[in-house]
Image (tube, rainbow, N blue to C red; front, side, top):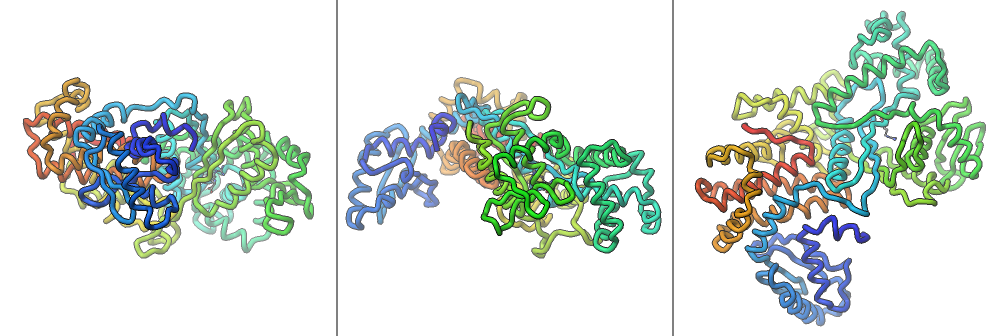
Length: 593
Ligand code: ARG
């Protein structure tokens, strides 16, 4: 869409082919139906079904394809080696080896540098890794963190200005339930839970918070007095009364914050906290605006927004008792993000991306629709996206749970990955704690975002599969090759040498098929990024990384690299792209493995 892509993706092979196809000036071809796709046939690099989408009668398709082909080959002598047409009207192209060599080299040098988004630069806020305070992080929290962090990396790489926020749930019934339980020493003692002093001194652990919460949740259904106390604490927290609950609330947040930070660091996730409570001061004003605009209406003592007609599930934004809900704080938050606020969101954002599980799709559809209908986006276009994801399941396809029941804690899951990495590995002296964390992060990203996936250590740590271990191993092997070649600086020195491009170009005339295949994959890095960003599907970048690594191994197996200058250039290029891809996915390569 828009002119954005032309500049930002000038290195995309598919875009270049597309442009040359358009330049054939075949009258009916338009930008939409000309896309070249990677071909899966051995003798062909790319294929286009452009002519088939023109709606021509069957007998005119092949002649039309032939006509396009003739102009395409005449116009594009530097890029194309061979081109032909196959029934019922596909156009197949094979690229010239020297063009691939040049493009692969460009990709490894300029293609891995951060971009400048120029006039298209957006100020983007990404809302991710936003658990509720007091919750012990479980495997379900993994996805938002690693997807969100990766989305941010990609946006930053494209030259956008990115604000990474963790919109933690620090208000509402979950934290209130925990607080009321934690402060009830009689019940704590009866259930062998820690005493309240542990909370007040912030000496309780994140697991203790989880236990108080679970106990409180049980009582909510059976103990009416307990429930009404929780409701009243919700209100007190929302009114920011300086009350008996302020200290335990602060301590709960402090304990959780520290636990979240530890896990985020292990997963290489960078984010700053800007929780629900931050937006409390804006709520009265935003509710007034919504009422004035006629969007929010009283209904049985509550305040509601009816978006899908009078009787379908409304957005409840103020309860009968005056309490606010998830939708209320999110409306105030979105108002602030769109308009900016001197003390909360100093920037008025051009785009907001929310990353949560798919069960919240309706919430976000309502939220965005309400903002539009309230006219908040009238004066300036603001792009609002919910990027939803599926569940993490156990090997048997049911919800992943620990032996004790309940979801597996994320910490336990990561620790176990480190242990299993050590057991499965061929090397002993590696940092298996690090490898385990990286492997879990990568495996999550390698799954289709919108689908549920099964978590099994045998897949997460598979030495030959599409895993972090496989990629990191390739990267470490590349460093070994470099050291053996007597190169002590990083490979980038090879790429910085002006002679290197010429060396590679000359060698392309006599390439082994595995050399050509590797260079072709290298030239496709930009296309992989393009695909990945189009719908925020990091698994596409992971698939690319896997193809790159597999091609590298095939090349390394078939070709002698030692003392072979052009092949060392190819290794240097592979290393550059491999590292960049890993970095975008949030994984730092390791030197030896
Ligand atoms: N705290 C919520 C949860 O645990 C996620 C918040 C996502 N962000 C937002 N602005 N609603 O499900």
